[in-house]
Length: 215
Image (cartoon, rainbow, N blue to C red):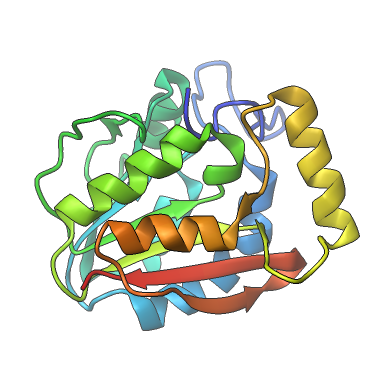
């Protein structure tokens, strides 16, 4: 799997029934409002927003509820995640049924979008997932459209913060293909795919929002 399928989710026994397929990502509760504040300035007023590696589906529901003028297309490579997304979003009017998308795949079942979101994936996935994400975003997005990435990064000329250093070590101990990515490497990859240099927005808990625009 190339997205957040490794266990940042958990069922909440006090809130679920045996038939409840919703997953709960604790980080979502902590970061969703900070991310939404950025997205209000980044996303267009109308159009289709494709989310890659939607995980539990909680982010998609939160953003779609706050931004009713947009249509949201969640996706994930995990069947378990897709069922959770369906359970979370089934009553939402502006969220489409989730798609099975592996970020690293050569073909995605989406012809175009007005924005792409990817939250907390690239450090919990092989580098091929980031390559696929950026390559396909370059194909799908129109001039001026945003590619929004959120998560922790290695930044040039700066030592990792202690919390991020511990997180990076934990990820690499679980899978040597995982780990915090170099910001310059991600920016260079995006540049090759026809994107601008990223706008960097500092976020809580030593995370960054990166906003690339299709040139």
